[in-house]
Image (cartoon, rainbow, N blue to C red):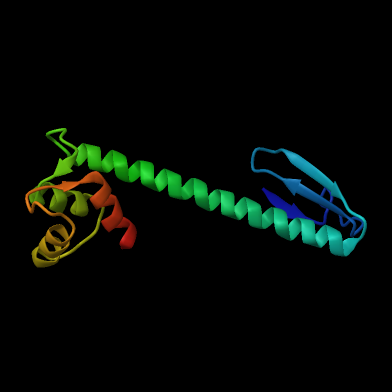
Length: 127
């Protein structure tokens, strides 16, 4: 959604009016007391939209990571072996040396044989 102090036709309009256009062709027209209030509304609405978009992108990213983890979890146990973890990183285009992979893997779990989904998510969100 884009907010601007122009009309739907694109012509300059009274500075007390603002127009919002969503990518789906939805429009919101705003009328304020004065140009300063209009500008404040436009800034605030743009910030809200950007924050919402950021939240949606983060949610999509987390769903993508969970899907990738489930694909890498061949046994369905909810955890990855060192080899599975290394393949997951490669699949996600995270290029590390074997030493770096082992250091991350060993540093993030207690049993040293498998790493759980929450641990993988925490690792990927750090990088």
